[in-house]
Amino acid sequence: MHRAQSVEELLARRSMDETPELRLLFHRLNNQLGIILAHAELLEAKAADDMNRARAAQVVASALEAMGTAKEIRRAATSSVEPQ
Image (tube, rainbow, N blue to C red; front, top):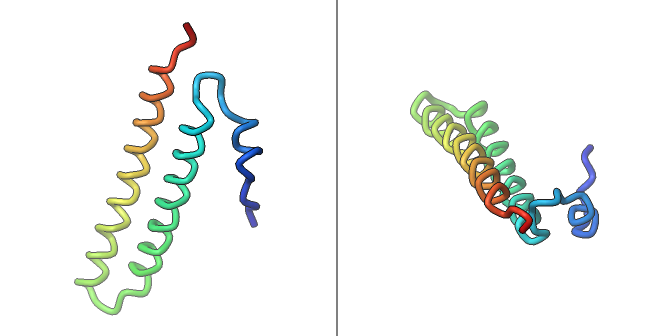
């Protein structure tokens, strides 16, 4: 299983154009969205009826969309932090 990284490990791996705080925030956000996604997928798989399955599928789709949005925000934020 994947071992959680310490803050120090995350900060040591940061890219040159990303602040440590920003990297840590994106890491936390992606972890939280991953947990939401996993729970939604579990709910979808175990749903007792089509209505609940459809609701869970919508949460899955929204979590995936949020992960994509977070990736876009990260890309935009890191490209705007150019060394002077």
